[in-house]
Amino acid sequence: MRTKTKNGTTNNNPIGIFDSGFGGLTIMSAINEALPSESLIYFGDTAHVPYGSKSKSIVIKYSKEITSFLIRYKVKLIVIACNTASAFALPILKKTLKVPVIGVIKSGSKAAVFASKNKRIGIMGTEGTINSKSYLREINKISICEVYQQACPLLVPLVEEGWNDNEIADSIVKKYVEPLLEKQIDTLVLGCTHYPLLRNILKKNVGEKITLIDSAKATAREVRNVLNKKYLFANLRNKNFLKFYVSDNPNKLKIIGSRFFSKKIFDVKKIEMSC
Amino acid sequence: MRTKTKNGTTNNNPIGIFDSGFGGLTIMSAINEALPSESLIYFGDTAHVPYGSKSKSIVIKYSKEITSFLIRYKVKLIVIACNTASAFALPILKKTLKVPVIGVIKSGSKAAVFASKNKRIGIMGTEGTINSKSYLREINKISICEVYQQACPLLVPLVEEGWNDNEIADSIVKKYVEPLLEKQIDTLVLGCTHYPLLRNILKKNVGEKITLIDSAKATAREVRNVLNKKYLFANLRNKNFLKFYVSDNPNKLKIIGSRFFSKKIFDVKKIEMSC
Image 1 (cartoon, each protein chain N blue to C red):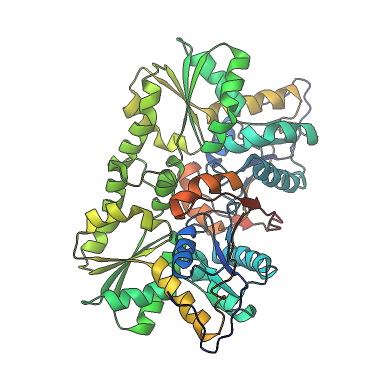
Image 2: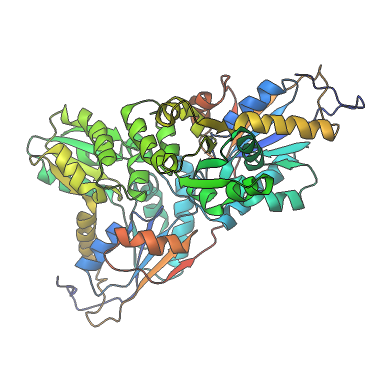
């Protein structure tokens, strides 16, 4: 992918990416693939994971502290690589931060509307994302669609247990998608960064006719658009780096993280959060 | 149950009980039933739940902050109603606090050794509890036994989803207990305060010959023993109270908490934690 800015200006500062845990590494992986010259700093808030079952106010508090940390690294753009944090914290971070902030919900919504022919779209997400109705609102800003939501609290622990493709995963996924299939959706948004790891079993349960929308690629495209628009691409000869931080359990990211990130993760640092 | 102290001295101060979330309410319920004159203060650390997948250092940090909060209420005794926090934080809290501290692991271990005839005991618990090997150590302090451990990370989210008795719960429980059954255990410790809610499905999967040890009743007995030994029983005419605090989502405790606590929970207050 070409990464030359319109007027030749470049900016080698890193892009900051954060999530409640490991799931956001699927987004980081897509960004790294689409924009290989960019330096990326990842922060996984493993001291507070999961965000999906927590309140709006506390997710905003955690997101603010993480972005303050990322800003110290002079990041030129921040990606909220977590659906729950995008649902709860994006509006306030956009207002308070001086760098552009991208969430995953807008990109996923755009891709879903683009893919759907019958304008009947299903959303799977955590309790927090679903209760926030963010996908519903975002999709209806773009086009009038019937949107059907399903909270799926067991899918994150299922993926973290590594049971991505067994009979239990199959029964759980079936139970969650059944009410959506009854609504004759033709497009299904995987509204949590863990869910792409269940792609095979999801595909099997929803059939070939339903398009699965995984926001990782859509978010990488959105990052590219914003860098382009704001003249922020790194130089193609940039000696880029990938850095990984967590608020707890650095070793676990090294071990489990590779399931989510396409490359092996060697160095992870732990940062004490004050909240 | 009689609650008169040896020398007639009484102490109406409350007992403090804490857990990472709601599970500890099963312990609180057993204490309330065994010692109805006692005032009880519960703290559920719902801002950081679950502890089971987090590191020792961070669970100790959270436990210290919670006990500082409880101490402000002049609690006369603290119960760590969480297996992971008992495994990680009990030794340090015992050293640093002036009031007696009781965890759930010692009581569960005692009950298991007492129940087992063939001295082959199985332990189900969270990742943190199992990796700490606390049950293994505690049981072998009492008697030489073969102890077989199984981490069961999906059971907490399963109970919180309310799927306590369906086919999916059945398959998950079967997968976790199978390796333990192969070891011919005759006693199985439910090493997490959520698991008693899966009692029916566990019973079905392990059969009638295996004794299930739920540490709630054993912990209530331990509380009674300590109060007796230290002359700390409340007066039988004590106008006792039950108080509930959480670090996030007070409404959720009211709704979900009743599944764990035998009485309806009306009033829950949110406390901001500094860590």
